[in-house]
Picture (cartoon, rainbow, N blue to C red):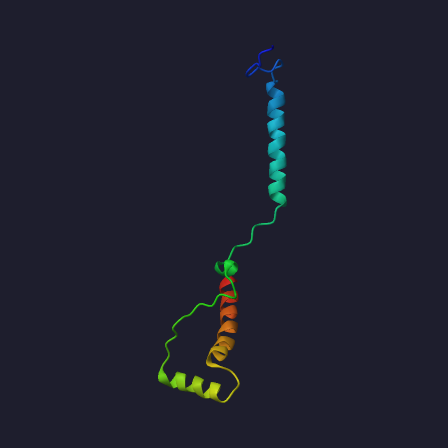
Length: 101
């Protein structure tokens, strides 16, 4: 029965010049691949958010503003929630665009 041998050294040693040429070639290719990639887009806080999950925020307002909003919603088919959302969403999007310029 033949014993299995452990680690064996390679019979032929690698030429240093060949090794340096191989490494240089690998670095060139790596550099070219990096140059071709598009810069990563900045990830925004809301990218991982879920539109189905509702979060609440207590919005304080003076009584005059509250009565105006109440008057609008009493005389339209919108609820207070829908009315405020229809006003806030465009304002938020506009502000984000201004910040990201």
